[in-house]
Image (cartoon, rainbow, N blue to C red; front, side, top):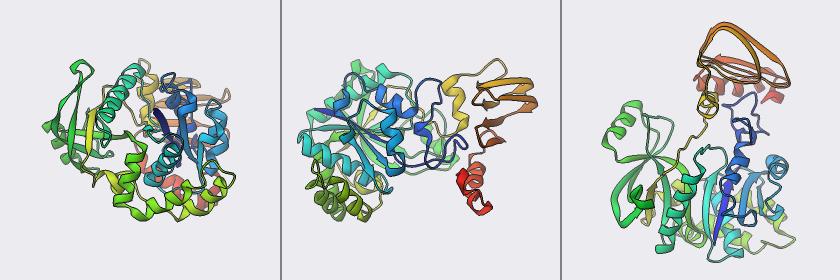
Length: 363
């Protein structure tokens, strides 16, 4: 059966001051309705019911994650005592899934992305499941056709079209994977776009739980052995203790480096849905739209001669602007940010410097 696995660990800086170490962006409500985490669960309903949804998160986020997702059984919120990258995360979920359902197919989803075409998303997942059902060895990756030469994403170079793998009435297709390309320069990314052979690697995957564990056993045997030791404790009173003691000993490595860049049974499915990784405040206009002056406002705002700004306020606090352009202005209960829109690197440096300024409590 198909199970959904939401990867909901980590912490981000690009949505500071709304996001903090203990409240990363997946827990934020950015579109005015539901948090990114809740929206990830929503788009899987009702065709993947809550009893087949799993969430992997960190200790400091577990309570808020459970509060936001009361539908998901508590035993299926898997808590990492420390961050160990995506291979241990995926492996932990696959270990639990295989114990509950030996033939489980797992759909792996990051918790902090936005997909605003849920019907097309479900169609894409159905196509991925068909690919896995037709060949249980397949590891299916979703690739997003790039719309601009992004330098912050990894790319998948496609190979030949899979025979007979024209899906969704011919609206999408699956291909072999020729190579992975890490975050390129703008010149290289531009060349990628011109070939039409490259996709953004959006980090959404579909495969059999046992199959990804076999991949880990082949390419990362020590990591697999650690997961196998944990498997003996799953669904027993010793589970939490075993994870707390053994998980930190697992190798920290991404699933891409651990398995995907070595395995030969990969295919990339061209995503039929709209996708946004919501990487910074500059993404808010894509989620919420903008007014005639190009401003995206979430909260109380009064402005004159204000253009192309992102403005967010809370608790009825008025933000007033005069004669400003291309700014991000974010007010929270204890901090206010004013920054050039799109200057994400400087924001990251600023947040990283708070501790040295005696302001660690604001990180």
